[in-house]
Length: 153
Image (cartoon, rainbow, N blue to C red; front, side):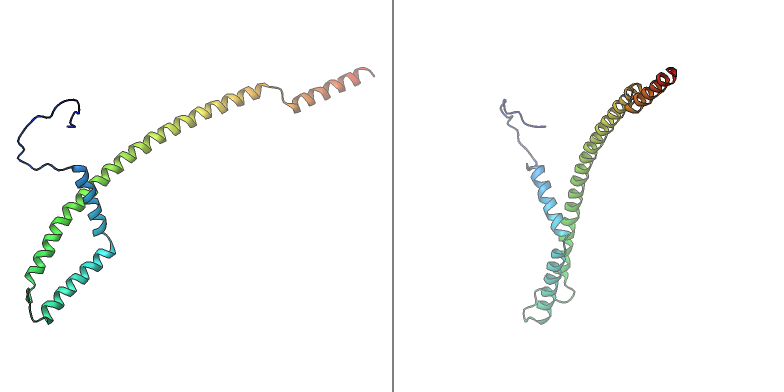
């Protein structure tokens, strides 16, 4: 529900934190857009490679061989990435639905205009069909001239 600017707000205690869903949606789209790039894959590959090399060659190993902490971090990243990608896809499908509706309305208008123009062209053809054309007038004049010249002999 949108807040009315002409009335004071009700003072209520909120148990849930307030956030702007539109801003959150835009942020999720930016993150999803970044996660779907080759740059992200390169960054993740470099990060994992540095992590493994550090924990194999460095004297101070903060995550030895089974790399449990690395697995935990990658799982956490995936658990946040999946819902963000789904949210971005839902927003995109909503935009696609609105665009589809606008395209359908435009197509309906175009079809109505085309039908109108078709009726107008048909009416013009009928009107032109009833008019005497230059060729018809010439042929009638030639016929009359032949009748007059033939009748005078």
